[in-house]
Amino acid sequence: MLGTADALATIAVKDIEAARKFYRETLGLKSLPSEESEVLSFKSGNSVILVYKSQYAGTNRATAATWIVDSGLEEVVKTLKTKGVVFEHYDMPDTTRKGDIHIAGKTRVAWLKDPDGNILSLVSSQ
Image 1 (tube, helix red, strand yellow):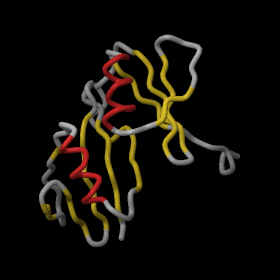
Image 2: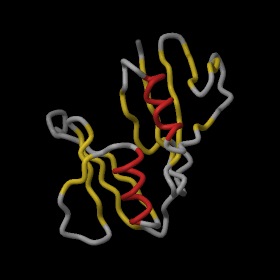
Image 3: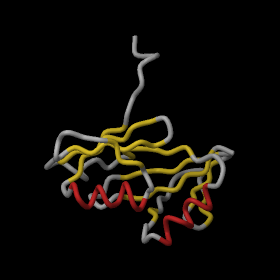
Image 4: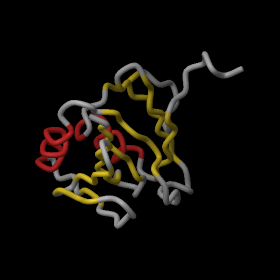
């Protein structure tokens, strides 16, 4: 039924202007036109990230959105660090960490948070 429909990530934030700056300037996503003042849309590859104002922002303790960056994960992490991004570190079974990148077999993951504490991840399986 939904197998051919596109999906998008929907992320709640408290401060729409801080989110606009983070997603556009820090992460480098392209803003899409929006007719609503408390809703932002960003283009990311072939996907859309919808960011909206909510009193429940930052309450999700799991990953809200993931970017697949198979080539150049280390470079993306390095670039984001120069923009002030702090990466999260988690202790997980069968996982090691090299700097800010967690490694489990062929999968490499780096986690970060947006200004409202939403958890975002960067994943490579190469």
